[in-house]
Length: 389
Image (spheres, rainbow, N blue to C red):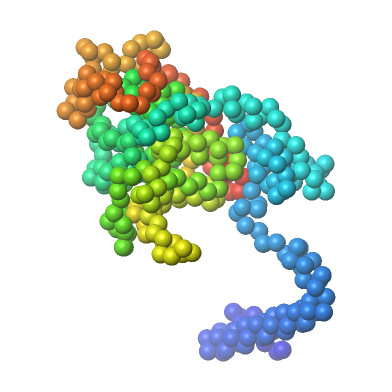
């Protein structure tokens, strides 16, 4: 074709340049169509040729181009369907090039069970009819937008309670965590605000940790969702999708401890955390049985997206705490700050004593140094390397 000898961009006349460009695009489409028709004709007579082509032409995606770190917190989840939970296929190992599953060391599973910080929740020693006590607060000087989001979170978690954070010193996250642990709370959730928008959530499992920090994006409150349903006080069901690695199991078990072990199915409410490309998409729905074979979903809200940034051992550190044995300001009657929003210590202790849930009670002092279990690194975005789910 004469027009294929030069590029249309070299033609100064705009009308002529566009005409030649259209002809070249049309010729490319026709050539591609003829090749596909010829290929389909060949594959019709030879079914093995189609299977070979599909096996070779695997598209590159974010999921199949990841590099998994073989550290203590992560493992390659590419296991064959017939392989058991203790067998993995390592694509980088020359000994597994034939596709044979590689045995996962049994001591890793034993170590995970021995060091599981959530063992008390899953042991069945707590009353499943009583929801875990969750304390929700904000960063200092929060605005109405963050308070509205916290109100939504109080409706999501059955045993949640929101308390405004006092302005000034003495209310670091580590001190609040110790204060909450000494008063029977099982979780602490701190919603951070930046530029008058919620941008992060810190989740602390009390009384001994761990502490997880998530970036928060794509928030949409229930009122903004068209045709949203109204939530009820029933305990919701929890669906965790895509938490396949060892770190994913840790994060998934952390979210499980926020909800009662036994949901109330008559409420027909379900909370979903879907992991995709290391982003956690939060949704809450109500399902309705339209017929014996069909189920309809109606979203309740809110919607938001989380991304794990780090996990620490224990409670958040307080740098200016002094000696580790120093009592917390919240527990010291002389140094305890006075705040109308913070409940009185005696009222909190009386409320905890009246609760039927026997959470561990002991004097908790936050550490002075942080010990990280896992931390996100900026090069993970450019190299497609992931340590997460």
